Image (cartoon, rainbow, N blue to C red; front, side, top):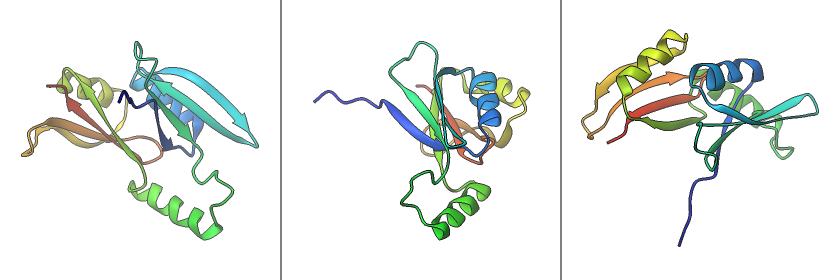
Length: 136
């Protein structure tokens, strides 16, 4: 079986702030930017990896989500417990310095974890946890 990850979804509640983080700080390419009904879906991904993308989506855009569920999603996003992704880089320390210098919200400086990886963590403007691991 030949399966790969094509796209993952993360919520964003401020498209311009999301672009500032993913495009300007992380250096991702903008692959698509679609608006509908006052909302925007922005697809970004690492340069040179056209088959892997992150879709930054309006939270609770699904019409099946109730008002109570929208409230819970907004609360979880504010706490940073709703969405997250793990990225990888050949030099986590250098990447940390660049991302921190870009003004990102630092959660954890680079550290050797007891489970065998060296990583750091940031929150994007929507509160999503962005962990960056050193590629082995």
